Length: 155
Image (tube, rainbow, N blue to C red):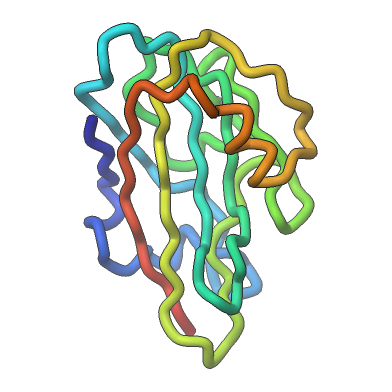
């Protein structure tokens, strides 16, 4: 399984358009596309997490119940036109949906890791206010495959 973005290549800088207003951006969710999902995939889940030591796994985006026939998320889709049935969860900023990069000044480049999970179940039953550990626990035993892409941002 592979995941990519037309906004940045793996390991490269995320353009300012996609970062939080507090860091000079517009908080537009990044475009993502994927292919070669394992056979038997019944849905997808997505996480965007900053594992930088300062951020301590800050959650920027969690999505569950993305339909198996979906192969992309368009730019700016968060909160507007997510694939039918998808559920966006609360991020570490306390809002539902995408929260772009906003690393503290002077902490260097932060990695923003997007992970797409192909799941053996059609739906996960999670409330919108879940921790990253509860999200990961809900995926246990259901992951058929996963793919990651990492964008960087610092200020």
